[in-house]
Length: 66
Image (cartoon, rainbow, N blue to C red; front, top):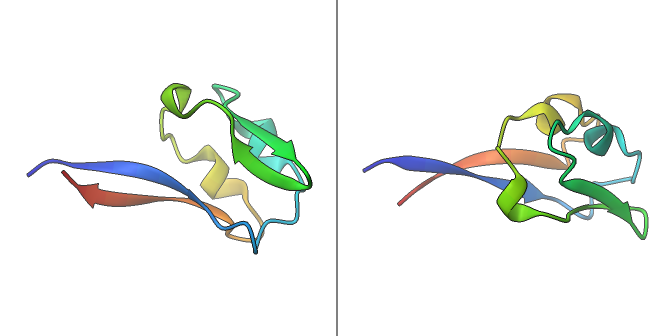
């Protein structure tokens, strides 16, 4: 089976700093009501730039099996 990655956002850990959104190469993240949101799920390329830069580990990629 081939796995794929999904983006997970932990709202309770997000402080709304915007670092993840600033580094997103496809600009699919936004800050709404002081929390990060995925505004364009289809546009996300799952590159991991958001995960690498989040100081609170509030956004990350996980592997799932299809």
